[in-house]
Structures are given as structure tokens and as C-alpha cells.
Length: 111
Image 1: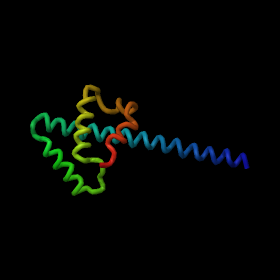
Image 2: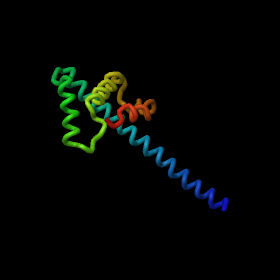
Image 3: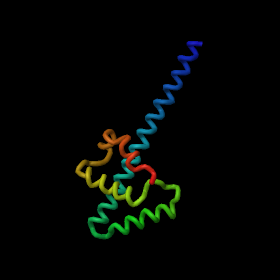
């Protein structure tokens, strides 16, 4: 029985390792998404094309027209802009991935 248990533990290890890799990939994609949205909003605001009301309208539009998309409230959209502006001196968000793997997914949680 102990041999079987060790083999089962090997399978559990495979599952856990794959889950961890999947979470890292998802977090990398989320960081890239938040960066791109933040950059877009930042440039629109900087050029005076957009103001606070437009970002609020965007959040309402997403909620109304894409009900399955969660976490894109006006507050979170402004956080994405802030994220981009804070770290835009770096080349791309890929360098941030290791620092912010877990922090960002909790900061921009569903709202």
C-alpha cells in the first residue's frame, strides 16, 4: 500500500506543479492586460480626450454590455491607470510579473 501511496503522491505533485504554472501564466496575462488598459486610459486623459466621467461611462458600458467581465469598475480602471503611470519607466510589465504575481490579482479583484 505504501508504494501505491507514493505513486499517488507523485500524481498529486504533477497536479500542483501544473496548477502553479497555470496561475503564473494567468497572472502574467492579467498584468499585461492591466498595463495596456492603464496605458490607454493614461494617454487619453493626458491628451484631454477623456476625463473622469468617460472612465465611469466605460465602466458602466462594460458592466451593461459585457456582464461576464468582472473587475472593471471605474475605481479599478483608475487603479490600472495608476499602475501604468507608476511603473511606465520600466520597459514593459513583464519585468514586473515576478514582483506582482499575487498582489495585482487581489488588488483588481471583482468589483
